[in-house]
Amino acid sequence: MKQLIVGAFLIPFLICGISFLGNFISIYYGSSRSIPFTVMLSVAAICLFVILSLTAIGTVFERNINGKINHPCQTNAVLQSIPEKKWFIEPYVIILASEILLFGSIFIEMYFLFTSFWAYKIYYVYGFMLLIFLILIVVIVCITIVATYFLFNSEDNRR
Image (cartoon, rainbow, N blue to C red; front, side, top):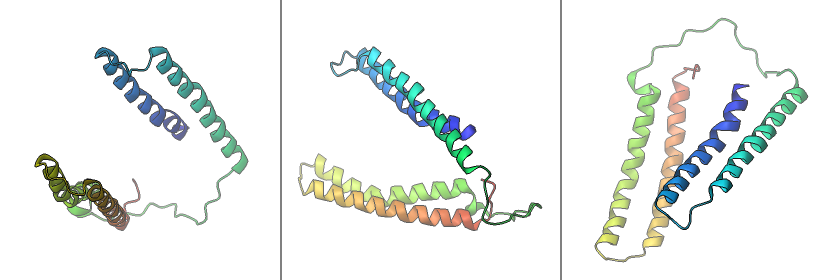
């Protein structure tokens, strides 16, 4: 039931909330591109009634069709002790190290790109930006794989 509520409300209402905030700011500054308030309310109503009802129907339908969950393996009823972790295996340290590596890998490329903009030296900027984006995607994939390996290797399955 908790997954139903989070899945139905979190993403749609987060997006609606950000849209409402951006629209209120554009109305405050008198922008001609602001969306009318009634349209925003109708979008929020669609999110509330359509998305919530379809998510609830899908969840109930899926649980009634599948019935009892058959796990592929048996688990031990006695909880095993979790070994002490070193400081660099903590999830917060792994997340911080991943972000530092990601920032460090892309900072120099972005520095040269912005320098070329500000120094009025126009190179092949869009091709260079595409190359930076591809490098960023590769680094994100590699860091995600390594961080996931470290988290699984710590043998702490409580999270």
